[in-house]
Image 1 (spheres, one colour):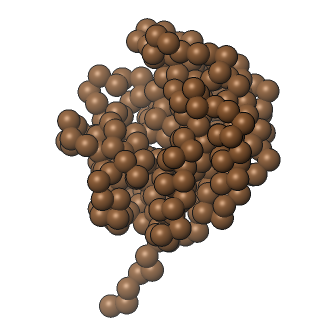
Image 2 (cartoon, rainbow, N blue to C red):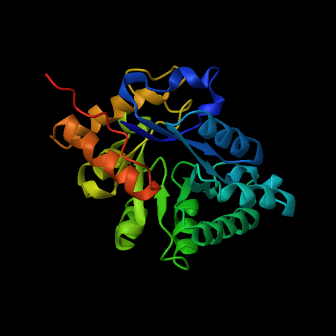
Image 3 (cartoon, one colour):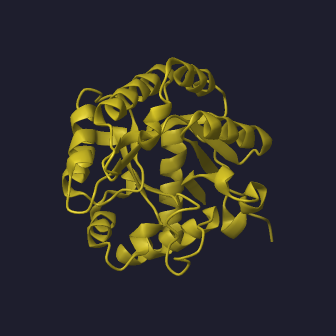
Length: 263
């Protein structure tokens, strides 16, 4: 199974997280110059780890020609499979929208240039939709760039918009999908076409039930898999095969499924 979005370098012992609960591959997100370097280093060290490089919307204070030069130099590394995470975050009161949009558009252009998908972060305050609508506004000018709507919130408008973009949009479902009050996410996970779904942990954040309250780990993605399989009334192994194939397609990963053993 593939964890399509994890912050592996945040863990105390990244090597210990590899392969747990049957993982075959992990995509380590490098959303700042420091974490981008860490993600690439881990991907160089371990054959089942891949990296993204970018600048998180809440870190746009770091945006500068020097920062962009670091990210752009890493973007063509053979172990880098995506750009980001980027996007818009209006959760915090000191949000600097203009800086976030500038960094978002730069990373869209970079993703197009290097032929990688862009991982998108979208977060609003409760009962607000400014970041979600802002992401749609920006993406309308970039219809041909593949994107992954990481930790999808279930927002109905963004769901419709993403589906209208065709196979250029994938939706990542994280551990918060398993939370009892996440009704919009549950509805999205039930109705989304299977070929557009990805599974992720966002470890060490958003641990799924029954691990909620603990630091998340990549292997816990299996709890989200089993929960969504229940929502969709389908076999978990079938869902695993489908979402792993989606991950390989959007990120360009090799098939690392273990070969069946003889009797």
